[in-house]
Structures are given as structure tokens and as C-alpha cells.
Image: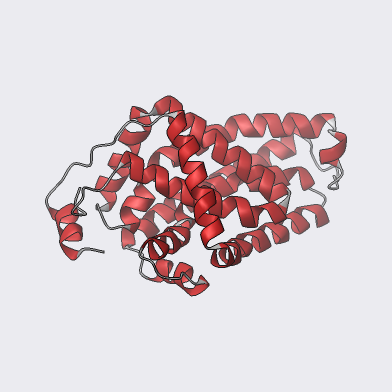
Length: 263
């Protein structure tokens, strides 16, 4: 990244002005995400496979312990930590844009070279994820109790389990919106070193409230696609990269660079 840009963002107090975007921009971003995935499928799917493997372990664990309705809260909870994990995909997209061939190693290298502010955002996301899972576990105890539930509950739509999922989604939506506001644009801003932590989070929150309804629509797209693909895990290796590249493209629409690379 441009050292002068980093210096300016970190010390001059430059205000990042969020642009408006529409549902048409969301559609365009998804199309861009799909094209980016098709251009570098090997590295994209390999990196996404790591998260699919984690999801498989969690799904097997909740099934083994007889608490399978907790599978969806874990899947939905991924949306709380997911934004901070996308920086690997952002790095792949940047390397491809430079005309070079991205490798799986490049995705992991993005975390090694990530600024401290990005790690703090990741820590906040992880903390909220723990709150979400703790609240979901309490709700599970109140509604379902100690009754064993295997993975077939999802197909048969058993009453108590469905009630638990509906109340859980309502409760989790509050935390999901907080994370959306904090991290949706701060993560790519920090990844590109265009702002300090405070500037990035402030700019992200302002951008979300400036585009409130379209951000809600984008959040619903992200949540729905991610939860479905985690339940149907093979889809995650395709859906996650597409959403990641789409997120980066949408970020560039909201916080565009000028021709000389400065904001």
C-alpha cells in the first residue's frame, strides 16, 4: 500500500466521505464477485475450504451432543466474525487486480501483515460472537431444555426447535446489525490502510446509516446466503468467496479511490 496514504490517513484526520449506493449496486457487486471467483477459483475455494472444515466440525459436534438446533445459531454467528476474516479474500482480489496470479499463501499472508486496528475489530467481533452463543445457549435451555435433538429436527420442523430458531434470529439480529455497522466498511479500510481504527469504524458506521435501507438489504443477502451455505457446507466454498469479493467491490463504490489512489 502507498506509505504516504497510510501516513495521511493515520495523522491528518482526513474525513472519509461515504457515497450512497442502491440495490442495483448490490446486484452489480454480486456479479463482480462471481466474475472474480471464476477468475481465481482454485485459491478462492482452497481458502474457503478452511471455513467449511470448521463448519463441518461444529455441525458434527452439535449433532453428537444432541443439541443440533444450535447448528443455526453457530451458522448465523459466523456473520459476527466473518467480516474480520474476509481480509484474505481482499488480498487475493488485490493481487489479481495487479495482473498477478493469487495463491492460497497470499490469503494467509494478509493476516500476517494486517494492521493492529484490524485485529482489534476481529477481537470485537469475536467478543460479540461469544455473547451471541451464550445468549443462544440460555434461550435453548429455556425453550428446549435437556431433550436430545438429532439433525433430523431441521427436516421435521419440530415445534420447540422452530420457536427457538425464530426467537434466536430476533435476538441475534441486534448483534448482527451492530457488527454490520462497525465492520462492514472498516475492515476493508483498515486492510488497505486508508484510515486508523477510530477513523475506519466511524466511517463505517456513518456509511451504514447513510445507506440504512440498502445496508439492511445487503445484510439480509449476506446472512441468508451464508447460513444456507453453512448448513449445506459444500456451497460455502463457492458462496463465501463470491460474497467476499462482492463486499470488496461494494466498499469501493462507497469509498472510491481517486485516480491518483488518494481519497
